[in-house]
Amino acid sequence: MTPAEPIDGHKSTKPATILPAIATLSLGASPPHDIQAKLLAASQHGFRGVELYHFDLLHLAATALPRSSSVSKVDDPDFDAQSVTSQPTDTQQLAAAHLIRRYCYEYKISVIVLQPFLFYEGLVDRDQHAKMIQKLRLWFRLARILGTDLIQIPSNFLDAMKTSGDMDLIVKDLQEVADLGLKETAVIRFAYEAIAWAPHVNTWEKSWEIVRKVDRENFGLGLDSFNILARLYGDPKSANGKVPNADANIKSSLEKMVEEMDVEKIFSIEVADAERMREPLVEGHPWDVDGQPAHMSWSRKARLFPYEEGRGGYLPVGMFLKAMVEDLGYTGWVSMEVFSRTMHVEGNNVPEDHAKRGQAAWLKMLEGLSME
Image 1 (cartoon, one colour):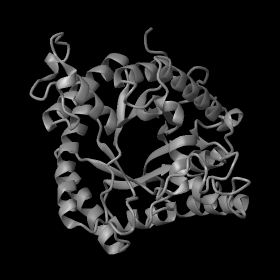
Image 2 (cartoon, helix red, strand yellow; image 1 turned 135 degrees about the vertical axis):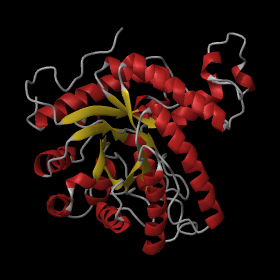
Image 3 (cartoon, helix red, strand yellow; image 1 turned 45 degrees about the vertical axis):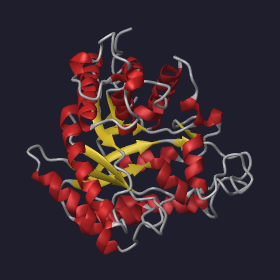
Image 4 (tube, one colour; image 1 turned 180 degrees about the horizontal axis):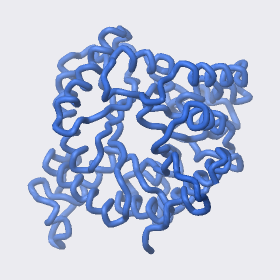
């Protein structure tokens, strides 16, 4: 099969204002699913861009690239993948980035962001902070090879003993990476995303406050419908799946977002729904993990593509999208970011099945935004 025509322009004669993307992890976990199969599936179902999960790159580097070899040796039939350690070298990672860029060129798809740069800001252990800065320098090289200028930083969700809630420290740490990005020959941008279960930065208001305080042209917001709606509307621990006053919460919060937020500082938008829990996700539930917030378990096990009500979806993703696109006037990439237990199912059909679901969700999304 060859790459399909983009799914945003199959019927409309209007100029596109948003472009379809999907996170590589949403097409299947690595392992068992390799990045080439996922990129091909995305392209065949009309996606123009992908959010590249660093874990996918690491898996490719660890299983397909010798520790001291270049991309040209990847197809060597004598290469023993079992000899590669589980911790790829920088050289392996850079070679994997080149190979992914080659796949993207072949399948006519772009890497729109490299993510997630996990567990960075506000670290109590400042030696670990220094190590993260060194890691970031490698990520700059990876991003250049992959053809993207954007790195996503999720708010730090290590436990509160390992992270500081000192906003001055958090802002200082994020200014540091922004300033390093500005020094690059091709400037690197950062999208900062509030994670619903993070101990310190877990709402869009707090992330927006931090973006304003960082005050760098290359530092903006990453807005994820799940992480926003999981705080304002959904609650996996509740019998009805909702927080108190959920409908009023979402209406007033989105109105506030439209009123206060500068659309030029929105660097990425991700969308996902989630299953309404049949039984509250509390102690004793099969998905309950000791020491892991319920929202994190819910996110990892039960996200859905938007408009999958038939699979149990119920979050008001359409309201979020209308606020972003129609009211705020956001233009650019909108990416499907879905974590689910289904990603770990084995079988060559998994990437295609997930890409097909993402394609159906995208078309429903355009219909809901009157862009079909």
